[in-house]
Length: 246
Image: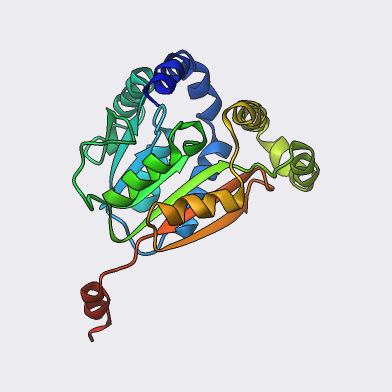
């Protein structure tokens, strides 16, 4: 595992600048926001897995409101440098609620049950030891917590997605620059994920179950190119009873 990480890390560092450019656009931000459709309640302690240059963390902080504290982690120091630079220059209003650090998601420094929500966008498929990451995230989630990942679907098709996108051609043409970046990011995503290993729906369900999540859901997204993987941690009986008291 360590060898695999050491080989991939320079690639992540070298790819920080182009990845930053591709993902810093409205359509990508909208895809990040869609993961929140699977979130219940109002999570305050949020972990952004594989945060990259910070786009996902900023979207989460904005959408979840002023009580949410977002911690973004990434294995690549270059990605974290860019995330911190964007926080200082573009999102100073979020400085008290968003922080970033270099970390290996298979073994973090955080205490048990430190987060209410964990989110990862195009993250798990790049990790050599997927079971280890999911076990660690399960440890980090408090009772009632949720994990939502957006990952490449092994059964997805660019051709099918392109055919479906024709129905939204007018909307895309109104935002040509963002649309061009988004299409480029999708093509690159499918290319990289083809080499790294896309995720089968049943494989995702098995991984979540074996990691100890009490319930899991798999939802297609981006015209079938992606999957939303949802893992839920059950509330403790005391929490359930307290919520039902008048």
